[in-house]
Image (cartoon, rainbow, N blue to C red; front, side, top):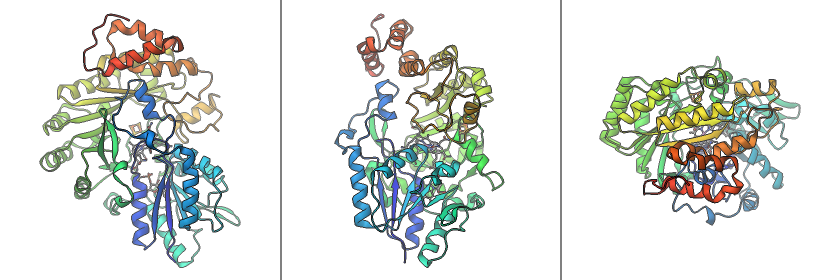
Length: 502
Ligand code: B12
Ligand code: SF4
């Protein structure tokens, strides 16, 4: 019998997301005549999420028209999931979870009671790939997918349908009567086949596409031009994934252009108003490919575009091609730190501060918007180094800048460093990038890190004469809440900031 599948995405944010994995796996299930439904936690009101926190600090422009307050409380999620498990009676509960979502999923499972005919619980995503041991430690998990799911999910559904043994399927860790069977991983799917499974968009309504952009909710389509990243930053999960996939084929794969074009057209038909290429380093592509992309995108699509890349990949030639499209384009860059020591020794980002400055100059020279991602709370980081980051951002004047608190996800090289140095014990739960640091015994204490992060936008965007006021907000936040709110409001006020001091 074809199993009934309930996909579950325990999203921890209140913003619509369209997880590609669910769209892909749903197509595979439907191709095998499975009945499919989708349940998720997005549209339940989580009290404080990273987006709201960033709006309160001035990093993001507050959004009009987001109806989070109309969402039911998170507590209702438990009863709604319970109801759907009882009424739909899925044979498989297929969970898509990265590390934060895994934490929420565990909370959910502690609060629901499985119906008599309990579904098989199958977990996949970055967390299960990096840390399958911890996933299988949870008794409620029957199967974990380690690595790419396309082949394993297809094999699993076929075996379930035919009543065959699932415990020998490559990429799957399966709970059996004799313990957990840890099967080997299959080779990575080569680029000429990786994008062959079309995404099932029918599971997602308009709310999944609406993302805050410049203070408004806009229909933003995310699309892959490539998958994987060629670099090895020591705080980044891509380093861990690369290690995991070693010897299994190419991790960084570029999509065949025709497949990319087709998908963009599909997304336009679905109402996309803005495109975001989800690739980590778009300008790693060669000039000829970027030229082909720009010419086609300008002539046929003509919608605002968001790109991400590394500072050293920004060149005059590439930015000029992008600018020639004459469209609103935003280029996001990982700056991470203004300290050479942190960049090179801690993050393994072998770039110079000068190359970061140059990248922003070039982007701005061509009239493109820029976005700088920074972090604070790296292991061993000092206050002086954090202020080197702030001063660098003041100098390069990005259109948007956000600061996250370093969190050592499972598998990243800096996690082991933190364990070895006694900064963490290794059993801490995943946290969002706006939560307190989990590192102990650092030159900056957790409150100092939180307070600097909270004032990051004020420190980086306000004219110099305001800085003593910002420092008051940083050092004595409780006594200066009103001043802080007033300064944040000024960041987005339409009139220029004129008042002397405060
Ligand atoms: C696109 C993207 C986003 C998008 C969309 C996210 C989404 N949920 O779809 C946006 C910009 C919104 C985003 C936001 C965030 N992201 Co993000 N994101 C990515 C990125 C670049 C690609 C993800 C993707 O679409 N991959 C392609 C799909 C097809 O692959 P996949 O999800 O891994 O699924 C495959 C397998 O894992 C498996 N699989 C997955 N689920 C299941 C389920 C079953 C049942 C089975 C059988 C198999 C299976 O099969 C799939 C097909 O092969 C990854 C980088 C990466 N290398 O993964 C980071 C990444 C996933 N993001 C990350 C983070 C931290 C975040 C944020 C928390 C950042 C922030 N501070 O806000 C938020 C969380 C937002 C949210 N609510 O989900 C981290 C996660 C780290 C971790 N250990 O959890 C990653 C790994 C980045 C990194 N290098 O550190 N992100
Ligand atoms: S931080 Fe960016 S450049 Fe570095 S490995 Fe991760 S995705 Fe690649």
